[in-house]
Length: 250
Image (cartoon, rainbow, N blue to C red; front, side, top):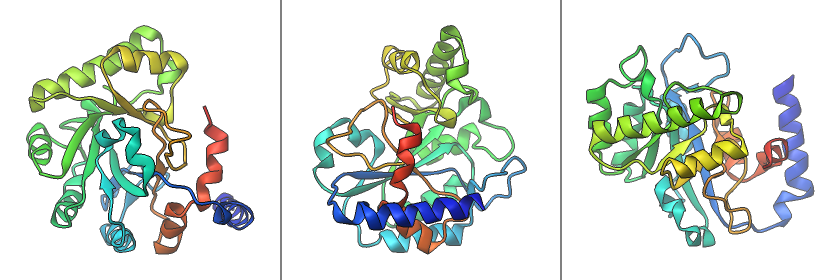
């Protein structure tokens, strides 16, 4: 029922407003897992690999793909583009990574460092291997995946710094981007992200990134879940669900 209401609102929003405006910018897509049946997945974050490939077929006419790090330059928002991001660090991301590398499509994986080596997630060696793929980059997704807005400043700083330093030591290069677990942050969180040396951070506001709304510490991302077949996916990348940004607008 809830999904049906969201879909109805999306159609109304698009037909009343969105289809009449020409918006240029970068649509950042947020994925999690690919094909693994996760015991903790009550939301549908694990997407069948065939479904993911159907998404890529829809994107095949996109001529401009970005790595997340390229969004540090807001001028890239002058034309339409897609950016693929994966959160948490599930080991099945390797399957998607192989497909994307074959298609020469860049992607960014954000790692929760406490998850490394646990069931379903990358081992250290797997993470090193995927980080060396030519179209891959790695970012941080905190140490333990907490709701940052509910944590003290001390805990937030530790979450942000530990994950950054751990990944830099493990992979041997700088980590300059992160994403907020659960899409949770406060003004203090954003200040800490800057203090800890990150240049970019991604949130869960469902919207396209434009020159008008650009904020390097609140890069908007459109979440893709299991129920998003070709039809729903196509609607998401065309802005049907951008009305959802109103709920989380900062």
